[in-house]
Length: 378
Image 1 (cartoon, helix red, strand yellow):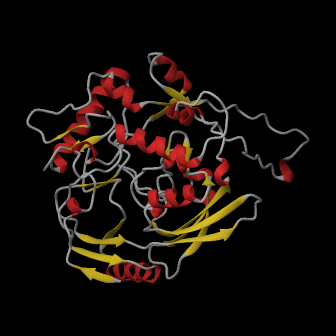
Image 2 (cartoon, helix red, strand yellow):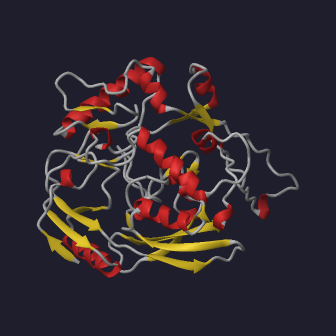
């Protein structure tokens, strides 16, 4: 554990907002991370951990507590119990995209569509990161985490993380507390070993993004290259010289709505079915079983609809700014709220509220923010 002079959070977050916190610590090893957490928890002060700062929207007032920078790195290859697969145990502070590059270089498949996503590995399960129909929950085996005020970390299977669309029990959603206040120390993934043979791409969203029309296997390196090109064209790859990338990526989540609501939207609004849970199990106590299983109610189908389309079709175009504001929509992607240079959190919040109000007035849907908000109200 190393205590350092606090750095303004505008210098450590991709949205470039936030003053220096009251206290700041750095952790470059697993042991330092655990020691820093124990030190902060002993004080009783407010706290949060900071990885790449790419999914964080911090308010203008100084944070009255401690910020722990997670800078741990390292990838360990482990045998998988499944034939043709390998497991990677990765430290929480490791760059997510560096992990994807490592896997692709070795022919390990399962996360290549998530190339270019900024941030750290430890943050990925918290919001179940995903792109083009591929999500970390498809390959996540377990996480090593430490609960607040506990003495030692534990191993938690992925099934107990409550993973859903851009959420988990660990995520602090706007307006509500996380279900479990804990810090991820390491992450274990199980990936398919494809080597140079590549892999058949079957997901609709990914095939569309790659422009694939047949089902021939394609090299993982080719998939990664095309995804990086696509993200760069949308301003979703960090670039110090491009204000469009001074953002938190997609600021609003794609809306998950019942199929009946989706049908009320214009037919040209892009939408994707949300897969139902086909592995659910009904448990009937023996003392109440009389030879017949209860009829299961068919769950209402859910649909994911494009928030970017909703924004643009509510009359807000790419590059939009409120008068005299230094915050604006990216000129390349309608989902990215960007800091055009020196914008305050208040300016970005004002723009976010305006977008929410326009989409709600036009389509009756309230878009929810995707980043974690600290000291900010929408």
